[in-house]
Amino acid sequence: MDRFDVAIIGAGASGALVATHLQRDAQTLRVAMIDAGARAARGLAYGTPYGAHLLNVPAAKMSAFADDAGHFTRWLQSRAPHLTGKSFVPRSLYGEYLADVLTHASSSLVRVSGTAVGLTRHDGWEVHLHDGRSIEARTVVLALGNLPPADPLRAEASDAYLADPWAPGAAQGLDRDATIVIIGSGLTMIDLVLALRAEGHRGVVHAISRRGLAPRAHAPHLPCEIELPEDARSPRAMLRWIRRETAARDWRAVVDALRPHTQGLWQSWPLAERRRFLRHLRVFWDVHRHRVAPEVALQFEELVAAGHLRLHAGRVQSMVRNEQGVAVEWIDRKKGERHVLTAARVMNCTGPASDYSAIDLPLVVQLRRSGWLVPDELRLGIETDCEGGVIGSDGKTISGLFTIGPLRRPALWESTAIPEIREQALRLAQVLREQHSRSAVR
Image (cartoon, rainbow, N blue to C red; front, top):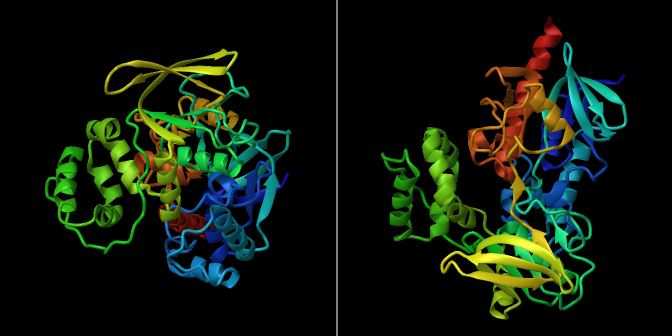
């Protein structure tokens, strides 16, 4: 049985950044990265085949290394000199960058092809794979990334209902003029609409979400410094403050200036206030915080203006197969009226699943049953400590079990973008190296 110092479960951006930082300064660590055969470092976001899928932030903010902000820009210009730090580049290109960084970090990294389905605890950990193989590791890092969305309709997947918008061929196999219904109006919806257009679809797409809001666009603005109010201990107080600040300057500058403070604000709010934020304000925060590239925004606006994309505020009640396709019944949020749309395909774009009490991946189920993974009360991820250590059902941090990225949202809130994940990866690598050094001395 192969033995490693660290086993990273997941080979997307989170896993690649942990591996890169672990190997950057500690070549003596034996590190295994376990994945199901996907290209390393891509994950859902950066494995897209569509050039129209652009990064949601400029290249200058996407370095893999916090201490070398220009790293990605230099890599980019060595391949495409016309691109700059201000460019919003294809996400697939960023996936190539992360894969290149990972390759050059160390030649001693071992990629293990397979799906982790469970863990056994000994002096360290035994990671069980789907085909009966297993590896041993002193430490395990759960780098699961974003999972496919939960199914709001709990319907059986078919050619007429796509529960996972990232499934291969999601935008294919449709008549050019077919009517499409998308549940959700966030970033995933925009990605899917662009994929449909790239595949030649020219029919009408109806996007239905609770409030009918779509992500806003990036635009040039002057950065600003802010001073948080003394009464920042509730979402309502922060909303009042944001409204005052944005009355005097570009809202993008205010939202960007808040970014270094959001984790602290989130942690200062009691559970009841966090719940209020999620119920009443999250959607407004998300559409302003998670913006799209100007080029994407322009395409989006053109599609809306031409009537090819129609946004609706409401809730889908049911869908029924018929001879024309699928009859989708939904209720208008403002008027309370019931409507029926007939579509060739319904697509679920409600955002990544985060309720780990309901996720049925074999690994998650086994960890949950063993008391080694505890879903948080708000169903945003799992319980972790300040270093990303996983907290068990007894309320104690589990020795040698860590996580990174989206699973840490309950403790950090901001835990899905590259700038946050690279900081987590750097700190986690430091913690693991220190543990390794202490063990070597004993």
